Amino acid sequence: MNNFKQLGEKIYDMSNPREVRRCVVFVVRCWLNYSRMQRIDHFFHATPLRAQLADIYPFVYEQPQRAFFYNKSNFEGRMRLLAEHFTFLENKLRPEVLLDIYREHDQILWEDEHEGEPLRLVIYYEPGQRKEGLLSVILRLADKPLYQMIFWLQKNPQGEWSLYIGAMQGPNMANAKDVIKKITKQCHAYRTKNLILHATQEVARALDVQHIYAVTNYGYYANNHVRMDRKLKTDFSQFWAESGGKPCADKRFYELPLQEYRKTYEEIPTRKRATYRKRFALLDEIDAAIANSMQQLVQ
Image (cartoon, rainbow, N blue to C red):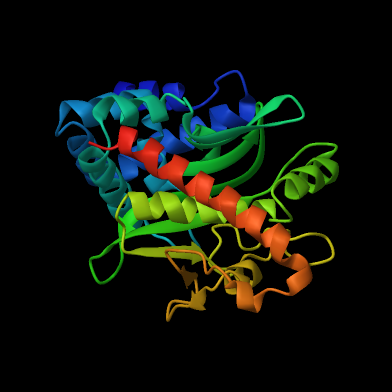
């Protein structure tokens, strides 16, 4: 009991009454699912690297217990998701990089400047994102996240390694619309949410996964999270469809292409070709930077 209690105190902010309640619920669930918690613990202590990860990121004990990642997920499925994600990364990334990510340190993929501030694409993760995934690709202006894709890595039902997007999040700042408008102009009319998906596709290709899946409106872990006017805050399904995605047999997911479709110059109106030429040059620069950065992260 003391071990579960100590673990809960490491996960939750015990100065917050709501977090204290969550800690109590966590401890009770640990006892009610004792054999499962033992399996989780055995997995994360099977290698020294995993043991370090569990110490840095103790939320691996909490995430299987809660209705995270996607709609109608279950305890066993979440346990398998975590095990596969960390097994994949343990075999793919350099050990120091993997630990650095879960210590909440940016892994820079590409960087530029916007109005004197650094504009970067990074791989990053922090516990506040744990409801929707286990890693993020973020477009960040200085310390402000503009757009991010939150995802995890897992085998699909056919046993093929895949990247699963649990959420796309936009900016949360007072002048967000103005900032996004300016950065879109800087990117030659390329929308920032398209840029973050493009970067995620490049990361997926660098990791050699075979598929990308993304949660639909129905598949979102909190799909009842709606506005007062009953409209979804973000229409995931529409964006995935616009990006070349196709609905899966499992209505919780779309499958997205591993590479963004690029229009030929014949498909582009003459008056827009100069803009597209600059945009494609920028994307080529970003792709090369991501490929080079990922080479430094993998084993």
